[in-house]
Image 1: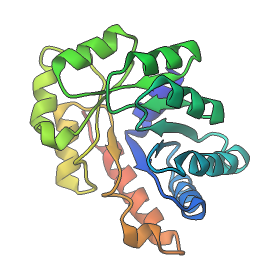
Image 2 (image 1 turned 90 degrees about the vertical axis):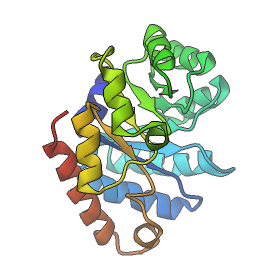
Image 3 (image 1 turned 45 degrees about the horizontal axis):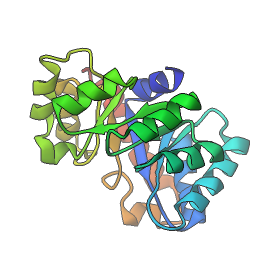
Image 4 (image 1 turned 45 degrees about the vertical axis):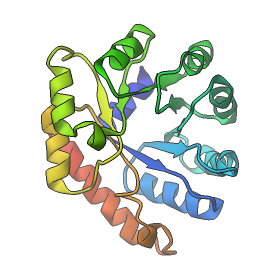
Amino acid sequence: MDVISTIQQSRMLPVFNHPDPVVATRVVKACYEAGLRVFEWTNRGENAAAGFEAIRAWTSKMAPDLVLGAGTIFDGSSARRYIGLGAEFIVSPVVDPEVRDACRELSIAWIPGAGTVTEIHQSYKWGAEMVKVFPAETLGGPAFVKAIRGPMPWAKIMPTGGVTTDAENLKGWFAAGVCCVGIGSALFTPELINHEDPEPLKRKIVATLSLVQSLRS
């Protein structure tokens, strides 16, 4: 619950992966210095675990209050591997009982991905405290979230996939009732992440974080 509360208070969860651990660490450092205290590293590519280890090593020394999690987790063994490497929460694109069991056994927050009312309902029955709606824009965008929250007003929903840093886009999501948003490529553009000067990226993160924290669900 402490992890879920931290994510919800942040109101935005950065979602990122990069094969170069130097770039990865630079991006995480920029997020932290911009004021974010949560970060999701996605399990994509053969070097994903090594990248996670690199940023975990940096956060352990330089940003111990940053809550670091692993995403794109499809099975229990992957969940256990990342938890063993220091993941404090696990995000999945699906509702998988093996992932749920691994998180429950190791007392780690589990955020499953859902695309239907049934999947959201099942996630909560299995102990989820927050559900990721993915791919959110393809499923219907803010209108889909608003429709779900009619019969399920208690659901904590985090859309990922189609969330941008545009003010109107973000206003639409929060007006629909989301508790936070997951943002990836719209925040971490190639131009910003490959620039050795982190200041432009930091400025974009600061502006986006300020905007989402000003919006009410």
